[in-house]
Image (tube, rainbow, N blue to C red; front, side):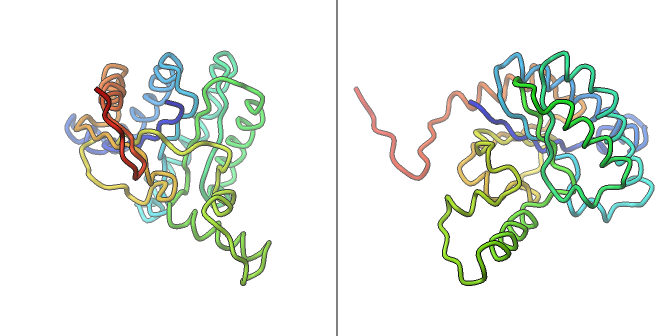
Length: 230
């Protein structure tokens, strides 16, 4: 398995259950990213895509959005030494040009500093939407090839946000919700899905291992038939 995608859900519910603020929940969720990244490296995962902030999340209260954007800067700046030490590369997908300037500058610095690292790639989805990604790809195709261009699926995929990263083998969603929430609609077409009731701040290495164990028991057919041999 090369690529795992995670919808990091449940920060607010985790905080509410403890009498804490939503900001406390988001901070706990942000702190958990490094722990799960360490586990992913130990498990031999090559790509880890994390759904951090959707295009719809801009509709949240301004104070909450401002706190989340501040977290983006703090995480990228504060974790850069560890990423360099652990040979981790940072990338992003989404309409990151919509982020406030301080957050964009911190991201770009971290992306530049880690671009030659060859270990785990952490791919953060920020101001991301699956539909937006498809629309952006279509607009790129029209701009480059003209409105009458004919392309196939393989050619279309080259215009997605990260065409060089393989599609996720496994999608993990924490906090029990049973929906994709507009996440990687193209890339998740044949991904296995694992849902846990555990809120993201409590999703630890042991919970991660449960997801991998579940994946290991499945037979991936990609629309075909797996032959049975006796």
